[in-house]
Length: 334
Image (cartoon, rainbow, N blue to C red; front, top):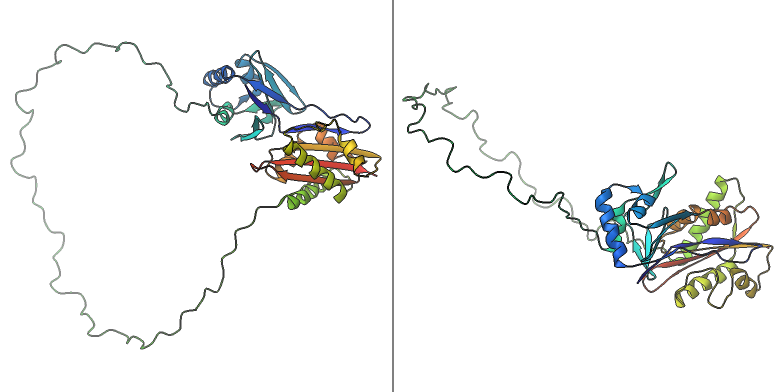
């Protein structure tokens, strides 16, 4: 079976110290084949997500930005606004992200099938007819004429005449000598080296730079809602990085680790006391802008980012061996 995990989990906020469940799916090849048939039936335009999955014979549920469809063979899930499918822990890029229009979730069905590698670009538009529409005639419809229908003209209709008499002499005599004597030496020496050096290729942002960019985006968003900015807490960032690294090392994606430790347990174990705390996690987003967009399109994550009670924030961005980034975002009020 194949397994696809959603790219983000809903945030947790005190006083409840439990983590929310993520979207997951398992599916067989038969489900994908029904998906291909559904695309052929619906056409290649963007269509409502629910209609696509129901055309595949699946039951559909939508909650908190996550669309889940399931049947007897398996379970499919994706996030609105996200451009990642995660298959067996491996991130697959969607050509187009699902989006909301007039209160309904839409998707390009071809984008999903291309991501899964089963989209057939060349489909016959119609089945060929079994027999030719008409039998050929046994004989030609008419006998060829024995002679041409008209005789060619014997003489041309008119003789061509020159439009003007050509001039007998050139219009101007060539100069006897060149108009200027070339200089004996070049006027200037070439520069030994180019005056401007090419700019170096910009380096890919490091994880530490991306963490600070997330802080800037959070404070920009909070300002738009009239909220005070958050300050950076390095001790929180250390805890967040440790959780992102642990999710990569032990191959899980959850607020609660395999030892049963919640984000609140991990914060306390680091010697941090607090009055309010919250955590957001995500993976697969390639930039601070992408992960912020995913979090702000989820009510639980958005509530943590816009919580007026929290004062500090730390972020842990860690890449796995394949380059996928795991994100952990911690908030506290001490």
